[in-house]
Length: 434
Image 1: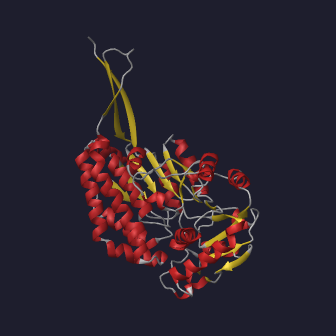
Image 2: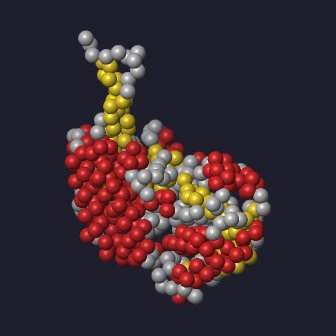
Image 3: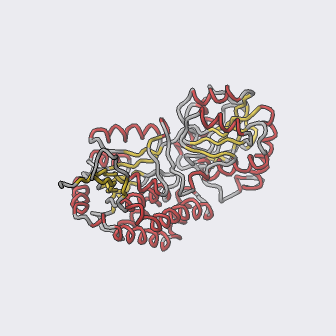
């Protein structure tokens, strides 16, 4: 296991030089990062095709476009974000002024997952840069082509005392977590998130944990079923369901369940073809271990849509399982694959209670125009973030902080929230000696 003391020491020394605190330095680094992404676009497309069979249009939108959009937003607003903020002073403090200085933490560790290996590595990294930090990025070993490309993109264009990509297996992450970073940003499973939090606690290192969970899509009896079917199916089966904010299960009013399933079947066929196994653009499951775990779930309930699979190419087609209960194995952990279980409810309060009894989800999607139902769900259920009559898109706007709560994580990022996450806000009261 490699020792990373020398790397962290170099970054601490460089940070102390004060260069990264200069706003123009940060703007130049963000501009450079954007240019690197643009010039390596074809290599990014190729790497994600090799690692996940991710189609070009999906990579351009969710991996490249989303990150470049974030960087552009940061470049546009960074000067105002980084400006010292004057605030009111109580009248009891006569002759004093008050202000808040945003300062970077120092050296940040970003540990990225495999499911969106460009977006979930470079979006947090851009936040660390914008706030004025040095950073070490550890990509996932489960997407080796993308990991290697990230190392090439960053390590050939930035000095290691400023930004560095470190590749490796679990042992590498373990070794990095033993070092005293000034901030840790982790995206991944709840189980590994607990390990990261435990390691961070030993150094009292502040941490953002972007985790997962079982995110419900609640479909009420008045939902527009055509739009609902389209929005749920496309958000669930993009990236073969390997999306942390994908709807994990459907909780549907009994009166509209059969119609909704039929319409979702139509959307799946229209989107991926009559025989999805012949669609060479459909992403595959990341590894044999994940395939085997997902394949076990096909034994639960009744398969009403899809169900075909091929282990030799890590393929599972978009699948909907009906007649599922809360006790089934598929309902015990986050699915993270192209399988959608369906549960029904007759009375909304009981459906709400069933969700509240379980760990807090990362996302929740509600399909209804009934404002009373909307208010009940939004006020009675704690979850990271979500949408009404939509799915996933809440995480694509710069103006909405994105993050979890409870088991689904802590902290948030995107837009200004990324700058805030990687900044300490230093409060100052200034008084005259006169």
